[in-house]
Image: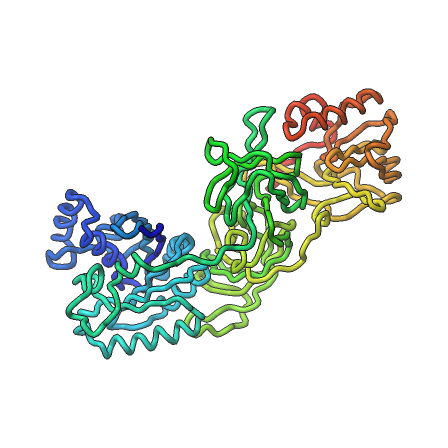
Length: 560
């Protein structure tokens, strides 16, 4: 039996999308007896003069049944002897393009219906473009309602020419064209005698056998969804392996910090495992402390990097216009950060594919857009790493999804330490998280980092010892445990950067690399502080409770 196939049906209004899927379920005996009886009763008051209306199996909303159109996305799961399927029946009306795009985002194959009496329409082109935008690589063009054109081979060939023009325009490579009638059942589940001139297989047979496998992406990576800390002895990073595999002993790089660590344990579900594979949710434990939180990405054997500027191909779905200069929340992978639409390179005419010079974009418009992010994040081109190449824009006021997009280009690549304040002197280098600003977001109701510092400080520099959410003494010492470096500050000036092994307690306040007060009041305390950190390994909760205090120099401020 072949693997699961996730596909969508789309096309113009009243092309028969819901009817087609309903007929597959009905003919293949994939509905229960009470559903079949209810369908027959509902059809008596429908628009087919008592004949079975197969669309009623999917159109569940009252408004859908009253208007005879699909409004919401209807998902159905069914299994034949050859394969399991999940199908999304999507709306055809332009007003519900957002719903259609949501359905396309999960699919591996698109069945685009075309009314044989009308041919390729504007919505046909729009939906084909959106499907390609969403990364769908396999297309079936189902020329429906062949019964209305007397099963004419000539008419089918005319439409096949239109489809071939669309295929060349959008550079579609894996396509299939099938003539059928969803209401009469011709070429839906079995081959039709009334379309004897068609030599190919019926739709269901094609779906049962099509191979939608794609080339594996480079390396392995896991966007971190959650840091799991059930007790002081356990710290695991949870997420789904998007490609490749991760095994115990593998060296991983955490983005955006570029810190490296080895895998010491893996849990798949609640069971220990030696390896986690693509598609599996996993908890990964590392052999040392690294700077990882929700939105970070753990990578192996890949050249993934962090970027601050993206070129994206975008579908605008909001009622108001998209205009350059407006700020949105950008959600890419498991990371959500502010971003600004810097410019619209060009819009794409849905009919011709022609590039248009525009100042703004209206609802359902397609465009190439320049997007600038508040801080660098792990990203890649959609064709290279799908999960890190697709994103949505969220309105900061309404919290509504305004656009979906895929990454086409990247710039302003960030090196290992360039995305945060750091201290550097010769070969010594340490991160300076103490100058980052944090706030309680009134929109997301969570604590967020809203300002990072990208400057690198060295001996003799004046330091920003006072910010909106922090205030440090004029003279103090900084111990960056992660990088085994100590920094001394006197009267606001950086006076020394040294290896931690060469640090001696001076009697001045001591601050950790994250900006927390270290409860160190003697040389003995300083030695015990360092010793306890080394003994804690990755289980740092007890160490933090014993040695660090958050609110001495830091506070969380409120921001919209």
